[in-house]
Amino acid sequence: MSDTELTVTIGGGGVEDARAVVRALEGTFGAPDRRPSGEEATVRTATFAGEGHSASGQTEAGPLSAPVTVTVQGTPRAVRRASDTLARSFTARDEGAASGDQEQERQLLLEP
Image (tube, rainbow, N blue to C red; front, side, top):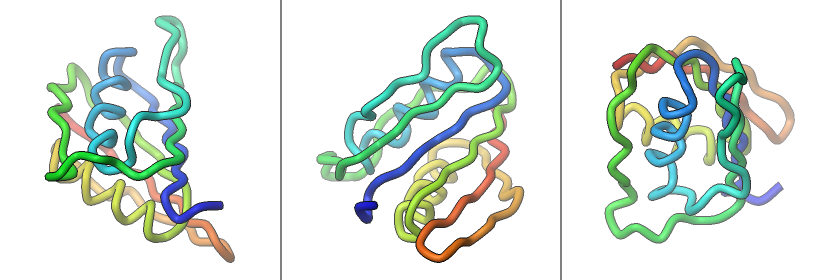
């Protein structure tokens, strides 16, 4: 797993809320390999494999219409960077983390 590889799982809200979360992460991680889709889905995912190219590392995300639960999974560095980026873009509450040998998982509650 590369140091910038990240999987994001988004629950709650609608597809536009999931896309706002992904837009917030694009400045840090680049375009995702997979974008959230599916109007009927209750959980959406996106995967990032590269490094962002934005000079500021921030992309305008847009507002959320409802609270969403976001789980970020990857290397400890990637998870930390994703958590920091989301906390700058939204009102975020840390809901806990789990660590493995080489991966970490963190859950955040993002509020509008």
